[in-house]
Length: 126
Figure 1 (cartoon, one colour):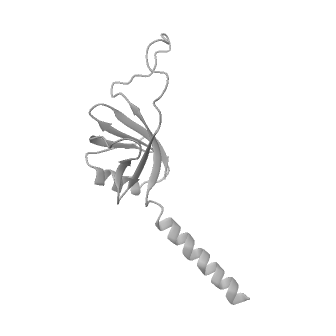
Figure 2: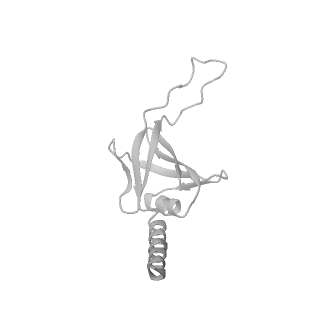
Figure 3: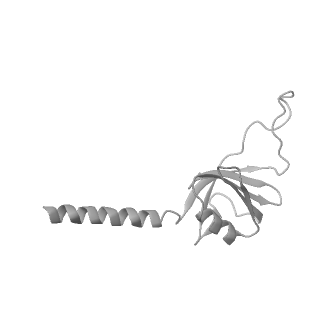
């Protein structure tokens, strides 16, 4: 009986370590498309500004697939931005650097991907 319990405990420890090492295989998240010149609505003039966000777009981020949009053709991203929970902002000019930085972070982060015509925003818990 002790051997059985020991085997179960070892298997549980192995599987939990395996799961944590695979935690950043892929991140599935929703991003929202916004105009680069977006401004928050003016509280004094409710007819000015946008009030309804765009429909969410499915996005996958991984080392193998890069940044992949599942519902639209991938736009030409000019730069990537990550903001951590402490308000620190990090900018990246290429996709591999962005993904490497993202894989080393933890907690809730805000992600922005800028293209020529619009920006894509999202939040993810790492």
